[in-house]
Length: 132
Image (cartoon, rainbow, N blue to C red; front, side):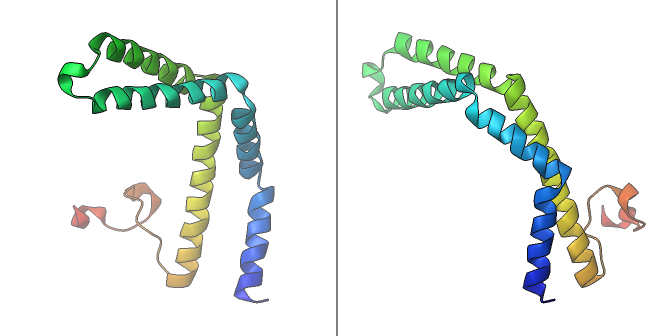
């Protein structure tokens, strides 16, 4: 088997890993959630309007409009960032990132014979005190 074929096999294995499957489900739920997607569209429009207001000369800026837009931007941000579907997606993404970090770490170990430093001395037997 060539290295490329092994990489393809690894990719297929990762696609079937429960962490990857959970990530795909959470991503799909996030992308298909009408509340979140509608809020993101409005958030981007409000941020654009805010940016346009800030590009005006100071004396021509509408301070009340800026405050209203900023308040709405903040509300939308909180709504999306605290939404259970978004939180589930972020958690699944973090777990997927950790899986990929572990895979890459294992490949590096096999290729170079050293595990990358995690800055968590409990993960290896190196004397971390000399690195500080």
